[in-house]
Amino acid sequence: MIRIPFFDLQRQYKQLRSEVLGAVTRVCDSQAFILGPEVVQLERKIAELTGSPHAVGVSSGTDAELLILMALGLESGEAVITTPFTFFATAGSISRLGARPLFVDIEAATYNLSPAKLREFLARECTPTPEGVFWSGVRIRGIVPVHLFGLCCDMDQILEIGLEANLPVIEDAAQAIGATYPRKNGPLRAGAISEHSCFSFYPTKNLGGFGEAGMALTKSESAAARMRSLRNHGMEPHYYHSDVGGNFRLDALQAAVLACKLPYLESWSRRRWQIAQRYREGLKHLGPELGLPVEPYCDSLGARGHIYHQFVVRTSRRDALKTALSERGIGTEIYYPLALHEQPCYRGLGYRPDDLPEASRAAQEVLALPVFPELTDSEVDVVIAAVKEFFES
Ligand SMILES: *Cc1c(COP(=O)(O)O)cnc(C)c1O
Image (tube, rainbow, N blue to C red; front, top):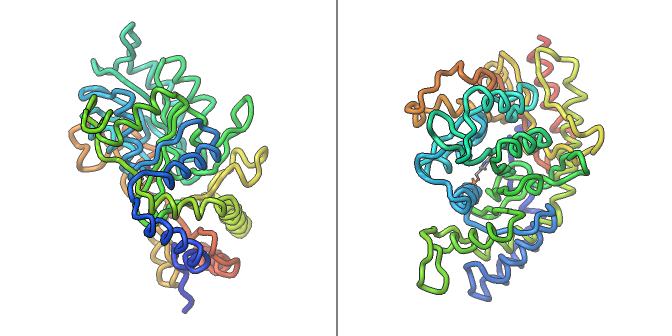
């Protein structure tokens, strides 16, 4: 039986081995491991790629989210609006500051935060006052939309809502590096659409390090200065602490590896998109039983409109499909099997599953198929054939 892995980092490593090991050796020879020129250079390159003026290298995507919220002064007893259908870190970083995540449901087609439901939530459940917007006596401090699976949220609407409510918007772009959004006054890259944003360089992300790494981006010079200070224990000058920060520093080895991989990112993203087109062509006749990803921006932007961090299909027979593919040696994953408002740790927030029905339904139906740049066309065809066989036999 041919085995088709859900994901395989070895293939990329084999292609880049000597180049990456050269960069690693350079850092080892310098024996300068924390922050320093390698990190500064990567920050510059990521700022350039996205078009955001300030990039702050940090220890993970999670820490980037935490750092942004700390820099914005989010305090215990306050709240931040976000999506219930995302990786846990999005909500977890809000909770870690003692604040409350307020979940607003997703759009069924994109899995992203629904602007219509966001508008409705603010109008029906929140109260604007001169001191800010309040929900049930709790002050709301921002909105965190997530560009899930590599597709940007409907940011024209979300930014408009944020502006009207006077709430900062923080993009969680962890899964969307390089993705482009057709903003009404011209295309923008994920991470530079709103005022603040974060990336993750976890090894399985589209741009992955050899360990943990992340980046916080902002258009505000003063927020950037605060983030640089807070990532290093609020230490300014040395051993004098104006604020309580943390150790969120990025290390030079990760920065060197990431800078080495960055020039390939564009072509990797294009290859992911090509694979997605092959899946779409091969599987489209299985609709509506099998739901395929949508590409709302690809008419105007082509491959730049979706970077396919994941290729996610949906079906009410999800678990059976997963088992059938596994029996044929094909790896798949479920992102995510339980919506955040139903997680055990959030029982205290008092949500019922059907409070956010689209997120709960997605958690029952989604399945991610293999998509990574080194996957071959013939492997994709094997997956397509197996999915067809499942539905047609
Ligand atoms: C990966 C991810 C994160 C966290 O990044 P880490 O680098 O793993 O800490 C945050 N949000 C989303 C949506 C992610 O996919």
